[in-house]
Image (cartoon, rainbow, N blue to C red; front, side, top):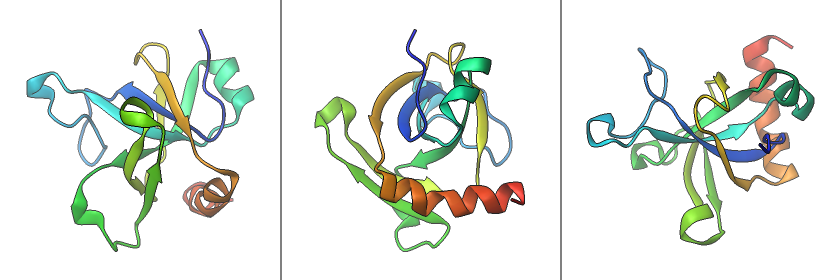
Length: 124
């Protein structure tokens, strides 16, 4: 199995979720998948099988919301990602048990823009 690297965009099974956590789009219809940006180091992911990642939502209600970072990555229908990265959530998921798949990657520039939010959440 190929583990994701830092800056990868992955898609995982995000259900069940609870409270304010981001979950799947429509679990009642079988859609439990969620795109996420991997922020954890590649060595952490390989050692633990876990990822620390920021969820991506496609809801248009987050246009011009400073708590969400707009993202548009090309790569065809399957690998393209369009939406908003939640700048206030860093979630820990088991990549293997959640059927993770790497589908794209953010640029170094975007990663550097996201990193201060992660540091703020962790008090670094």
